[in-house]
Amino acid sequence: MESSPITTTEQLKIEIPLSLKNIDVLSGLSKWSKIVGVFHIVLGILYCLSIFLLIIPAVIMGAFFILLGTRLTNASAYLKYCLQEPDEETIMHALDNVRKYMFLNGIMFIVMFVLVLIIFTVILVFGIALFDIIGEMTDPYVAVMTWIKWINRK
Image (spheres, rainbow, N blue to C red):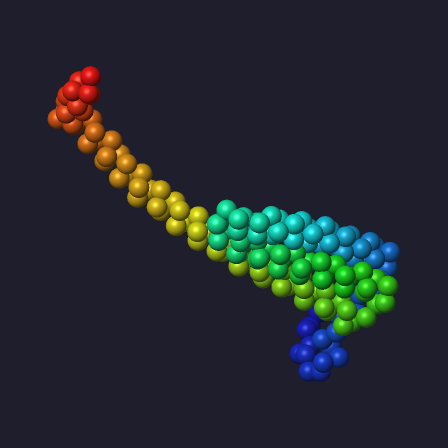
């Protein structure tokens, strides 16, 4: 088949009939986005409660999780409304909220990946330094000096 060049906005429309299978898919997406959204919000609140332990990065992460949860619960509400009153604008709002959730989730994964790389680098550097410290502690002079200090305490 030859593809025709898109010249009008009428050709940009996607029409999806609301068959039983499509309604089942939309209702399942609505239900699971609500469940996952609520879990994100609860997890975000738990992270935000760590302010009492003075853990500021966890509070920032908690606010981020709450934002993710609200995106999904908004998408769920639009999807439920779309099942009751099929409307192009409603489904676009739902898909836009899912897009925002995916975007924010992707940013979170990238930031977490960078933080894990930084942590591994720090562990590697201090791990090598720790081996040097242990090597110096097993030096005969240091071992004799610690033995002499131990005997003088008695």
